[in-house]
Structure formats: structure tokens, C-alpha cells
Image (tube, rainbow over all chains, first blue to last red; front, side, top):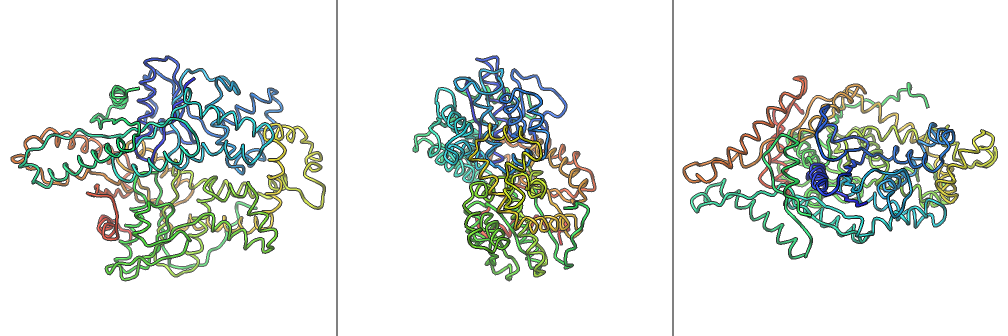
Length: 274
Length: 356
């Protein structure tokens, strides 16, 4: 099982990139799941009631449900599980103990081999449309905090195993999506530094909405529009040079003038090189 | 706690705007610009923000201590103030006020669950921003307060947070985890309630170390949970007050627009007032510039492509929202907001939007 986490600043196009990445991965594997994290679904809004014809499955994973599935798997006895989950005390416990939901989500993501812990996921490849920068960092911090805080007990033990899977470059990969603008770019580098301090997972960067601008004549360069486009071009080049000088692994994703969503996903997936 | 109970607020003329929207739509810059718009009309305005970009922080002249700072610019005449929330600090102060006993305070501040709760997870930012809003409203010193809501995956999480926190502080539930000095131990209580199995399950899942921390946590928060409960109720009253208006911020992204539409329904169902939606970066900046086809013939297909996309998006947007909602479109600025002049220039977009 391969795990691809997709993160980045809010609004950079993480979800669309996740769809395209899942599409691309479906070419070499016929069991790809795109898991969307959180309690509100973006894809539901994107596709509305239409069911898109995509070569992979889309699922929405939230903390409560992941924890529920894990408990059910662990306790095995239906009555005990009901007693555990169908009361307000447990709900409060889950809300009060931050990190627990995050742990459950990561537990589900890493439940395949070699951990083999939890309900079986029918996929060879998992694309996780994860939270934006700060929340993503908090997600990965959860098992580390648990393992450090509570040194004994099943939670500590599972936390350590989750960290091992995330640290395994043969299994896990992190994709940071950014734009060539200064703000998301700065956030992307900050996030990458923070992640590297936390885990040893390989990180690749994707500069989204990159535009090959038309070559301008001298006459056009002197117009306000020409000047603006020149500046835009120079910002994009600066972004590329920054990645090169820092020796980071990056690719550009072109801005595509297409509003039909399935076509858009397909066209973006065509530009991804793995 | 009875949900039907209303907590009267002292009356004053302060108007509140709360900006809601998904991350990355430019909510913080727009909140500051709205504040500038009000200040330029001689209204004493406070913008409360959380986690702005470093540059905006420097621009507004705020430091990370939750204090109110005057924004310096000759045009603003001292009417604009800004505050950067420090969630942990507010939460700790709240705990201190409730506990009073130094030993108990120190014990609580060291509790690992408290530390997690008071930092960025699990709705504490949402609570502290609302607590700050309430304090500033009660002070009666502002004509307007603009609250920029904390970044979250989805805007609705902001509204759910107080309810979640309230549930956590529900006395009946807190009692469960508490280890009271009288009335038996935590374990004893559980046995009495015939919930031996639940305890077993909890221990199996979390380990006993975790259960001890949890029990300590609820033991220590009992001294301030009632006060916190009252504040949360007051906040709920304030949020449904006609002085309090919600403003949604979105961009041309169709999924985000649909989410905003859903949010309007949810806000209305909770008796909250929402009448305006701001579409940020509604028009790409390059379409604001004159296109000279004689000088730039090579750009013709490029411009046409952009116009078509903009026209397409803008038509969809206009058809999406009911006419009862004011749609305020703010075109993309040439450069990101980086100083007070940029904020003031952005604020001109609010003129005529009936914010005063």
C-alpha cells in the first residue's frame, strides 16, 4: 500500500490536485482510493448530486467515524461497541482529548501492511486530500505527542507504529501544493521545514496554476498590460529558481482554461509526472 | 444548564461584523479593509484577527498579546484599532480568574489535556475569539467591531465550536471523569453506574495513564466551568442579536460558492443575520488593464480566453445567490496587501455596500 498526502495553504487547489493525482495513479493501479479528510465534504459540493465517472473511489474520512471503525475492529463484540459509542460521554471524551481524532484518522490511513491493524482498506494506493498547512502539521504531530506523553499502553504502542509507517519512504510521500505567489510559497517552505523536523517522509512540491505566458513584442512590453504580464512571468521564474537553488523536488501544474470538471481532472492528471 | 435560558447583554450601540469563509480567500485582508472603510467614516472600529500573515501583522502594528493597537495612518485619524488574538494567553487568563488558587492553577496549566485543549486544536481559538468579542462589546467603547474568524477547513466549524465546548463542560458529563474527594473514587462511581465495561473499553483503547490525566483535567476545570458556561451562553445571545451581522467571503471557486450558499441556510436556521457575501478576486487583475490590440496583437487569444472564463464564472455566481443577499464583488488587486495604504485602497470596494 502506498500513501500520498496532499497538503498546502488554503485555496491553492489541493483538492483538485488530489483528484488529478488519484487519476494519474489509477493508470498503474486499479485500486485507488481518494480519501478526503474532515467533517464537511468539498467533493460533494464539487460534484453535487452527479456521480462522476472516475477510475477511483472517493471517500470522506472524519475523526469520529475512523475512531468508531477502529473501536469496532478492536472490541469485536457489537454490544460492547454500542455501549462505548452510543453515549454522550464518549463523544465528549473524543472532543475533549484532542489528538485522539487525529490519531484515529492516521490509524486508518496507515492500517495496511506492514502495520495490519484495523479494518481492511480495499486499495493499493491511497491519496489523502489532507488538511491545510497548520492542521496537517497538527495531524502528524498527534502520534508523536501521544507516544511521548503516554509511554505505556496500547495507544502509545500504536502511535509508534503509525510513525514508523509515515517515516517509511517506500510507503509514504507528502505533496505540498503551492502557487508561485509569495504568500503560499513562504507557507509551503515553512511547512516543509516543520515537517522535516517531525518526520523523514519525502516531500515533493507542486507549483499550481502555472501559466506559460505569450512571448511579448517590445511594443507590447511598454503597455500596462504587457508590464503586468512581464511581472507575473518574473514572479513565476523567481519561484522556480528558488526551488532549484534550494534543491527541492518540484513540478509545475499548468493553469487550464476548462470549466467541465471531469475534463479538467483528466487534463491536469496528464501533466503529472511520477 | 438550560438551553432555553437567555443571558441578557448590556445594551449599547456597537455594531458587529463577523467574516466567515474557507481558508485562502483573503478574509483577513478584507476584514482589515472593512475596518478601514468604517474608520474612514469616523467610526471607532476594532478589527480582531487571528493568525494573519507576518506582513499584515507588521502593517497593522499588532503584537501577539491580544492587546488593542491603534493603526497609524494620517487618513484614519486614529479611528482604526486592531487586535491579534493569542488564544493560549486568553484561555490561561480565563482559567486563572476562575481558579484563584496558585497551586491549582499551576497544576491545571501543566495538565497535558489542558495544554492540548488550550492550544490550536479543538475549538479553543473559536472560543477565545468569541470571548474577546464579548469583552470588547461589553466595554461599549466601539462603534464597530470586525471579527475575522480563525482559519478552519470549513467555515461552519467556527459556529459549531462553542457548542462542542459547552458539551464538554456539561456538568453531567464532567462528573463522569472527575475524581471527587467525596462520594467515592472515579472507579467507584463508574461501578455504581454499572459501567464497568465502558471503563474497560476506555482503558483498553487509551491506557490507564491517559485516563488519570483525563480525570485530573475534569477535576480541575470544575471551578471555572460554570463561569465559562455563562460566557458561552452570552456569546450565543450576542451572535443572534440584530447588531451582529455575518459576512461571507468566497472567491469564484464554484465549490466554495456552493458551500457559502449552504452556510447562509444554516445561519438563518440558527437565527443569525447574514445579508452580504463578498466575492474576492472576482475579476482577474489583467482584465482591468486596457488591452491595446494594435500594440499587443500577440495577446489577443490570451485575453479572449481570460474574458470567456471570467464571464462564465461571473454569470454562474450571479445566478447562484438569492436577490435578498448583497453580492459585493472585489476585483483582484495588482499586488497582495502589504501596507496600510493597500488596505485603505482595498477599502474603497466597500463604498456603497451599506456597511455603515
